[in-house]
Image (cartoon, rainbow, N blue to C red):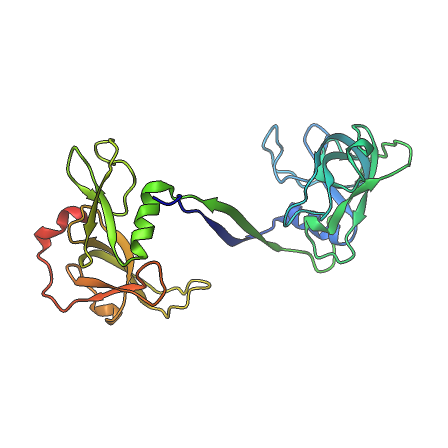
Length: 315
């Protein structure tokens, strides 16, 4: 057979959260080129600030301002910058204890090479040209020649005009999915308008899509069995929220469909029928579009509904 298939996939969504008084003051301060920390119960200054004491779990509210200069406490060289990282050239990830703070802040250090970075070196913040109230308002750190000093942290009320009260952070995962040989055969068969499962040699159940092993018996499956193309709706849901980048009008129906000859229901969209007429037991068949590798949706066949007893074990 041909080589197993692979495909680049992306999982992405925006994460939105509100900010309490501590985080709001910290991010708004960055916008104003001011770095704030919070004083813990034991007197230490924590930067970035936290809302609760990491030792006692007491609520913390005493904000203090620290310096934009500091000392590298440890570092690691990043030889190849990636999408979304602070710099588009090689740089060092550094933990920097800002002057007046007792904890270290993680950020990027702009340096010509790893030979230019060392633990104990002095650095200062390079502020972003445009600041919006985010950690990216610190563009990076850069080497500083000033003598090591430890000025005390100064009390700060945490009050700014037009404070930042919420943030939206994009969460994204890029990865390459390899379905393996079993599911590659299944996908390749779909391109030929065939649905192929695998039969368990012990319990004789046919699984679609195939997994390469029986989930009940735990033994490898190898015997290929063509199923369908028709099947029965076992259960379904009505979707009322339009998905991003999915050109389907709402409401629409997704269903579990037990293909004839299969012992596992697969997931697919139902079309060719009003959403409020979809029902359990509805007999359906696949609809293929030209050049597609998989069915676009399933539509009613016009057959009488299947008897409940014929599919109840597959719900």
